[in-house]
Length: 270
Ligand code: NAI
Image (tube, rainbow, N blue to C red; front, side):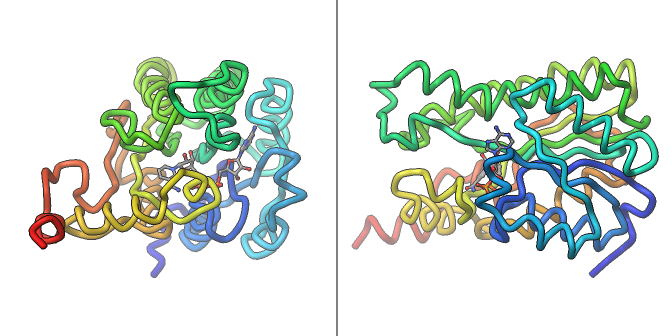
């Protein structure tokens, strides 16, 4: 269902790798709501992913950018504003990767070169995106910047590894940059803390199958899907949420405020 919530709005969507990606679903929903955007991903992901199909479907152009490279980000923002014909109204940061997770390094045995790389990609890149947008004065007033995060930033999930620390940093950037973007440019900055979702990044977490079923049983409304997340993001890009900023917004079917559910108790009473 479309409400034309983003009619006339322009933006950049990072992180659509394949049709499971949260950014992919978001691009489809933003397009349905009348938004125009440039798609971007790391050059390596262009080769692995199917982003061309998404670009065709959403009538958008693709500009490769490694989100850890200021040069790439500057080029991306310059070209995107040129292509879209003006400043931006929305930006989605949907990027995450831990080298320690990929290489099966336990949290108590981190390789710090891996840690630094994962932090740069998953957390600092959000500051880099915000700072480049800010310096280039590329956002329209009442624009909206959203990044995706996970509750391991607040509570321990042992197999989430160093991504937990990266997400804590990412959420802090939203608060800190949100202050300056709000004061100086009337732009909002938020993070959405999403339920476990079966995507390439999600499934990289050890024991993901158990993890996602547990969350499903714990959440009164069930897990939020990638499409649900896309809908929520659309609302944050729309004019209906203009005074929401510097927030970490839980989008998890109620998981984060549930101590225990009857379903989980039943499992332990067997
Ligand atoms: P995904 O694997 O589809 O997306 C991750 C994206 O990050 C990929 O498109 C990848 O190419 C991109 N990326 C990696 N390195 C990059 C770089 N240097 N520059 C630019 N892009 C780069 O997985 P998903 O799940 O859609 O991930 C999107 C966001 O949602 C991530 O921040 C993730 O941590 C977050 N999230 C995911 C959850 C899940 O269970 N899947 C739960 C909560 C948050």
